[in-house]
Length: 109
Image (cartoon, rainbow, N blue to C red; front, side, top):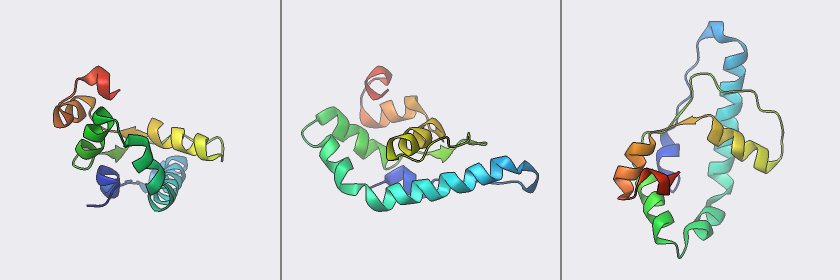
């Protein structure tokens, strides 16, 4: 499993009758792939020296993360807007992340 851990296995399912949702799911997969390819050093620097963030990063690698069933429409193209949009359309369990990282839910939020 790569650095992105749970993100490595994010799948985006699609039904033919969904139309717009299908397009949003394809955009989600494309944008996520770009971040997975280009953002490794920044993510490492973000957690360096912070034990809580290190625990979350390690726990994240075994977490079940999926795109929401119908991702919202991406409204902007800046890196920050795309990043926020990816997170807003990701589905995962905070309880599971807290348990795997030995932290409390408020600490992983």
